[in-house]
Image (spheres, helix red, strand yellow):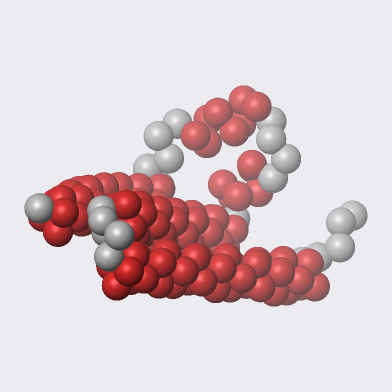
Length: 142
C-alpha cells in the first residue's frame, strides 16, 4: 500500500514536469526570436538604463537571450530538486519504521541537496567569470 502511494506520487510529479517543461524551454526561445510581448515598449516607456542598448545591439540581444535560457534551465533544475526532495520526504514518511526505506529516502534527499549545491556553485562561478570578462572587454564610459 505504501509503495503504491510513493509510486503514484512519483508518477504524478514526473507528469507535472513533462507538462510544465515546455514552458521553460519555449518561452526563452520565443523571446530570443523577437516576440517580446510588448516588453521593449515597456522598457522604453520606463526609461530603464540599458534598455535602448539591448534593443539596438544584436550582440547584447544574443547575450540577453542566452541569459534567459540559462535562467530557464536553472529554474527547471530547481523544480527537479524540489520534486526529488518532496519524493524523498514522502518515501521517508511512508517508510513505516523500515530503516532500509528511511535510509534510501535520506540518501535521496542528501543527493538532491548536494546536486543543488553543485549547480548553485557552478552558477556563481560562471556568473563571476562572465561579469569579469564583460567588465574587462567593455569600452570605458565616455
